[in-house]
Amino acid sequence: MNTEFVRVVGGGLAGSEAALVLARMGRTVELWEMRPTVKTGIHETDMLGELVCSNSLGSDALRDARGLLKAELRVLGSPLMSIADTCRLPAGKAFAVDRREFGACVTRAVASSPTITVRRSEYITLDPAVPTILATGPLTSDTLLENLRQVLGRDNLFFYDAIAPSIWADSVNESRVFAGSRGGSESDYVNCPLTQDEYYAFVHALQTAEQHLPELPGEQRFFEACLPVEEMARRGDDVLRYGPMRPVGLAGRPRDCYAVLQLRSENAGRTVFGLVGFQTSLSISEQRRVLMMIPALHDVRFVRYGLIHRNAFLRGPSVLTPELALAACPRTYVAGQLAGVDGYVESIALGLVAALNVEAVLRGVARPQFETDTMVGLLVSYVTTERDDFQPSNANFGLLPTERTGKQHSPDREEFARRSLACVSQIAAGVSEWTTRA
Ligand SMILES: Cc1cc2nc3c(=O)[nH]c(=O)nc-3n(C[C@H](O)[C@H](O)[C@H](O)COP(=O)(O)OP(=O)(O)OC[C@H]3O[C@@H](n4cnc5c(N)ncnc54)[C@H](O)[C@@H]3O)c2cc1C
Image (cartoon, rainbow, N blue to C red; front, side, top):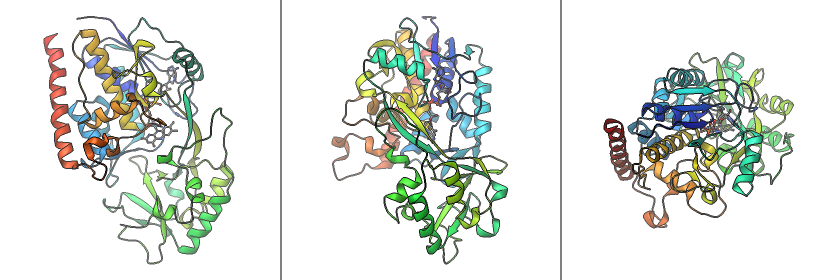
């Protein structure tokens, strides 16, 4: 077997996954992570696999695209998915984890791997000679981004994204909340109800509140799937109460409840709550003023304010080969959000695929074929197939080629899941033969 080492750049979700997958196959890995020497402005720790915002990894139901993606990753033996399973917290239908525990477990798994060496330095220029997986994520350092622009001959796209605040659980007024989740167990969410008058006063305050927008090059655009609440409020008075503040499906809601803000625990001790779907780019003083209008949050203390940040990604279809390698630098593969997916689990998935693709090349075997019968395959196809107006995407059934679904029909999800899991089982069996043969 070829004994070359692989360099993985970025110890986030995609990079840690890729490093652990390669190490499991006996590959020597050099994992570069710039934190804590160089900071991203968003990550708070020096842990590998840090979840930067919400502690939810989305649905775990097989009929949901992100749930199916998780199931596929489990079949493929994803190391990070297996760690997530051990750090799971109760969160109704959502799959939430204790984020500190998750990061700590990923860091330990990497540190205890005998074939991974971690280099805590900023990686700056591509090295075409070394097989490399670039997984530096949405907050890729400026110097590396600049170098990528030069090598790829075109600008990266930027858009803006916002994150939600976190608050101390003991600062929430317990007499103004009720427990309950939309479809989960009662204790998973804490709901802060608003009456009709309170709701419209809150929405009108959001519509006129001052935003904090950093000056960044490029057109100012938000990611449609993750709009700041003030942006949603500006689109119409009722958008929020049909969106993240919808009061439906909550058994214990008061009779005059017109809208709710949901809080979800971010740690096993339930000392910190995240505001569900409340990403915001308001200035800090405005976040305090407006959020304190919600009766349960009159005296709230913030652990972290919401903020707006840059989100960098490559225009995958123009620069990536179907193997996820850079056409301009074929021994460099790209994984995670930088390749053009959005989401924690999606980033993990591309980390796994990039690792298998590099390993296949080094072993001189055929790479696994993730067809569009699988959620993993749909994501790979999305970031490598030419399309207009490319934007990062999370896993969803809309990624299915239209000739497969027909214009009017959505796929039979049970059938799709059955086929996809059979397909990834075959891939997993094929991959395990690589190591038994070696
Ligand atoms: C603020 C923010 C909030 C988000 N919230 C969510 C959310 O709630 N839910 C969700 O599903 N997705 C969210 N995302 C989107 C995305 O899924 C996550 O960012 C995810 O962590 C991406 O995984 P990744 O491995 O591609 O990048 P990351 O997990 O960010 O890992 C990249 C790593 O590379 C390191 N790095 C960067 N440049 C260099 C360099 N030059 N040399 C060495 N190391 C480098 C970074 O320090 C980092 O550790 C969010 C993104 C951002 C930026």
